[in-house]
Amino acid sequence: MSARAQEAQAGALPSCCPLYHEAVELIGRRWTGAIVEVLLQGGALRFSEIAHAVPELSDRLLSERLKDLEARGVVSRQVEPGPPIRVRYELTDMGRSLEPALTELKAWARRWLDAAPRRAN
Image 1 (cartoon, one colour):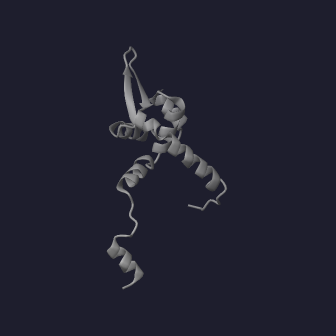
Image 2 (cartoon, helix red, strand yellow):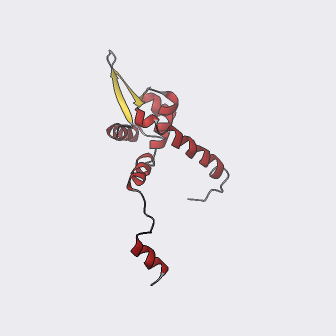
Image 3 (spheres, one colour):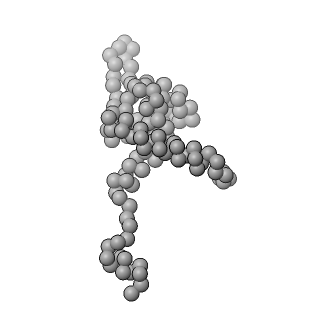
């Protein structure tokens, strides 16, 4: 029996943790990391302030990502009575708890991606 077959039989093969995969899928969605980073830096912000901070992000996609983050418990939406009525978005405790991981990811990116040669698309 091969070593690989023996490992498979013994259950020793590594596998991806489903929660890890879910977390990477959530934060790794296009623009989501940028939105979370802006909210970490700016606190409670209006839609227009987030849009201004991430200029290449369309309003439609920003709205979609904020709704998704709210549904997942990462962002809370507060409606301020008017007139005019204003809506602010803020990270929840769950969202703010991402800060250490995102800080490490930024450090990794500065070390490895900043100096890495870029491939043509």
